Image 1: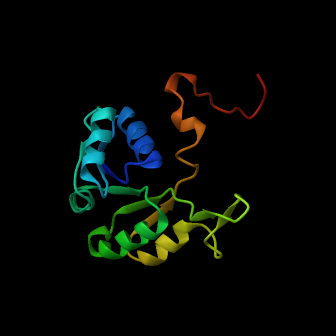
Image 2: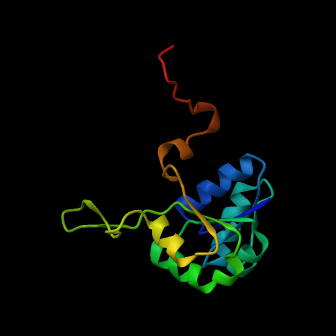
Length: 151
């Protein structure tokens, strides 16, 4: 199984790193191919940088780690190639308001629902946790599992 991570920023690079550390075959693509190559090289573990079109064509599952307007454009552009593939949307379609707070740009809910409407013939999944949170940036050895009862 190959997973393509589209986007090599904070979320995409962390997702690609964790997948590769888990033994998954990962390709990473970004608008700036040089940046994707730099990220792939820093991750190692066989991660390869490719163009977006090649990533879409070669992957069984795709993680769109881009700003939602970019994700939406890519979903429309590559819809025929995404048929039958699993599309994972870790994005939160948010923006900063005038006071510096965060507001949702999705009055109807999470962005994965909007992704699903763009791809009626694919399986779209919402990432269950923010991929850029502290859990993903900590070394694996320091992560702890939550337990249902104190020990």
